[in-house]
Length: 187
Image (cartoon, rainbow, N blue to C red; front, side, top):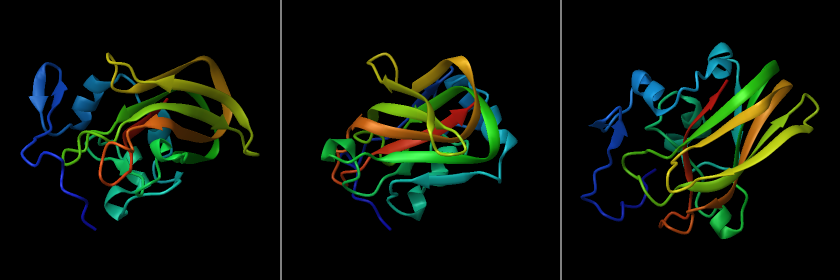
């Protein structure tokens, strides 16, 4: 499925990593974007269940937000944006209880669609086996910060699911009327 043409066709997206401009981010570069080790997702690789409110197409599916590649993104379907009165969400379920100390959300860095898809504020929820919210926290981006980093002050045990919901976004800043998220890291 093809997406609409970028607003400025000649625009080329680059990411600043370690003082160098690059157009692809490797696993090593990921360490420079954040020091979140992503240990919880790595431990259960291949055993996780991903879900979301919607996705644009298989090219931008929910798995893109958990693939360890910040230059690939999950995009919601058109109209599924807080800017359009919706509550787009993304979640990961674990096969057993985990302990969570930190969740980092890297904003969209998809080279073909670099601007106009950002989630500006959102709510992180940690849920237990019964689906009850055992921790909830809101965060928002600022002019100095491109990504959201939920550093939980206490250790949260018994987490079976993590869900993030967009509360404010740029879904009204692009022709597809959708939003995107680059990567979710959990430790």
